[in-house]
Amino acid sequence: MTDRYQTFTTTPLGKTLVKNLGLPDPTPLPRWTEGSPVIDGPVVFGAIGETDAGKAVQALLRDIGAAFSTVTEGVASSTIRPKAIVFDATGATSTADLTSLQRFFSPVVRQLAPAGRVIVVGRTPELASSPEQHIAQRALEGFTRSLGKEVKRGATVNLVYVAPDAHEQLDSTLRFFLSPKSAYVDGQVARIGTGPLVSNDPSRPLAGRTALVTGAARGIGASIADILARDGATIIGVDVPQNADPLRKVISKIGGTELLLDVTAVDAAQRIAAHAQEQHGGLDIIVHNAGITRDRRLVNMRTDAWDAVLDVNLRAPERITKHLVESGALRDGGSIIGVSSMAGIAGNNGQTNYATSKAGVIGLVQALAPALAERQIRINAVAPGFIETEMTAKIPFTIREVGRRINSLQQGGLPIDVAETIAWFADPASAGVTGNVVRVCGQSMLGA
Ligand code: NAD
Image 1 (tube, protein in one colour):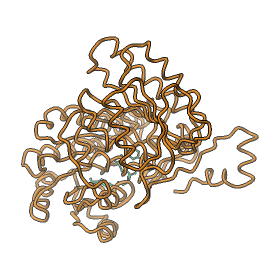
Image 2 (cartoon, protein in one colour; image 1 turned 180 degrees about the vertical axis):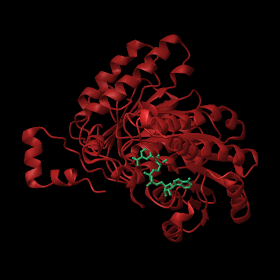
Image 3 (cartoon, protein in one colour; image 1 turned 90 degrees about the vertical axis):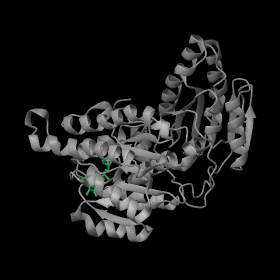
Image 4 (cartoon, protein in one colour; image 1 turned 180 degrees about the horizontal axis):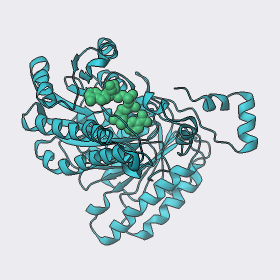
């Protein structure tokens, strides 16, 4: 689906009307392309004191070849137009330190380049060493979420909480949030814990890994397959037999194997495990992307529509995960990724079945993350907002138009935005990233 309104706003007449009538002005968002740098402009770095996290951030900026300047007393050179501003707030030990946020950001944020990035690094509040530190760190969430609503022109603001002694785990997450890979992730909080230190080639982080992607024939699933393959994974694409042709097209482009089955079939998990073992010797990544909607308000909801949505979106991922983990088909060190939805967080009129299933996916992440950590298996989920696919093309025009605009970026996301977020979760270097649910929604106002 093309966003005709956004296209119109780039014409001379569109520009005039947007300006004079104060209409939404969605800035086209650049996406990452192979061979591009992580970030293509200067970075301004600030901090509250010298910390391990701050040192890790600066080491990464050097590693990716970013031109960065350090600002200690708040005023960045007015000649710099930063593409990113990174602020290490892990050193905030009490609310007195929150003063630094205003002092540092007020002058520098107005110079942020279009489609710029703001990243605040904080200490996980629940793991703070004192109540005072907990309070100050928790306050960062309000700051970043509000700043996300203030910065314009396609810029994003995100918060990364890092656990004590987990600063060495920051790299893959910072690379993601700095780059155009996170184009549609805005106003989010990511949490990083400790884990084994994995150093891999950031241009092929999934080399030698096998990834199962359900619902891979089209839409978001096809893009996930594409992006994970770009990152080096061998793909097992799953979809229903009716979608054999489009699935073949996806897989023939990227290599890998196809598996035609309905994920709700009683033997689906066993067939997936057998296919993965026989064709690929096992599995490293599972992406539960297959999903359906059967919208009706609850008073008119038919039993079959209720059951179909719960079966595909929640019960199948739950059953398949259980079998692949218990049978050992998913290797230790693997990564499981659920696809939830903003509706699972905010609820949605006419979607009690869908929202139940998608909130359940969040439950799956939260319930399994601690136990799976013993085998160094990670589980996370994305919660997409309005993404331009066949699913959202079916939404009536006016509701669709509202869905596209009521977020900080004033536009819908693309399947690749969800896929890139999943690739960050799947990256073995994201060893400290588990139990996260990250929205890919342009900071939608719904459920915020
Ligand atoms: P889509 O309808 O375009 O594609 C879904 C794919 O899943 C199709 O290829 C379909 O054949 C497959 N599938 C459905 N039921 C299956 C089953 N029983 N077994 C195997 N395959 C099955 O949908 P999409 O927009 O690409 O959505 C992908 C995922 O993202 C879904 O889980 C959806 O709920 C979620 N999501 C989408 C949006 C959005 O805006 N598009 C927003 C939030 C969440």
